[in-house]
Image (tube, rainbow, N blue to C red; front, side, top):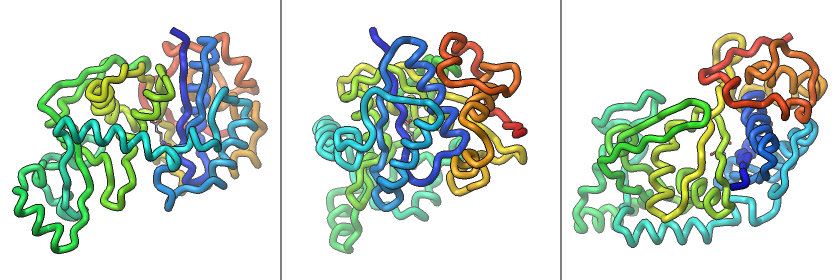
Length: 308
Ligand code: GLU
């Protein structure tokens, strides 16, 4: 089957070096397999994102020599314009009896007695699953607007990640019932991403390792909704020289600063070095990396970047 990959950035700020590494690896995975690449704009949260940031990131990708075959700022590839598809999937989950309203506030969720995950997220205790119809009606009368959660089974979901190897989670214990629609009506990433990847016929999902812990619940949602799950490849996260994880709010290593400091070939060389594709950071184009690309060279763990 022809490889169909995607890069799915959230346009909430300028991309940083870590976002670029994920983009480069998604591009190399598709191009080295003579596959296709889709650019999807994950602007579900219209308060935090903007078309201006999307335009900027498309310009930054092109500057780096990374192209795509479909997508960008076209309604069919923008999550903010795809609500109808998420609505449909939500209804299927509802018909299967897997959805319930959750009235917990943020502080109530944090106070839940369930254990915290390794990544710091709270495993929801399932408190609102047990509300009676009367209790729900009272909360509604008091003006509380619920978020909507999907009920996770006591099931171990294991996947073979193309970069990180086997990864498994018990959905009920390690993940917990998760939100698929927020109380303001906006659909959550976890639902939107699998609906989009399935409908866009994406079969290779390449993205940062911070999302590895989302993969089991996503793989399960694919099955529940009757879609074929993709192959996942989670890429190393980059750490700044002082050990912190890169974030969009840190501007010292975002594309604005990087484009002033490096040429596209220098920056590609730096990324390729971080990705284990070059022995030292030397000038290279993305195209020149295609023939030597292999997942076996890519590190499994976080990588500290050394800037020249
Ligand atoms: N939109 C997410 C981000 O920018 C990536 C989601 C994904 O690749 O599944 O971090």
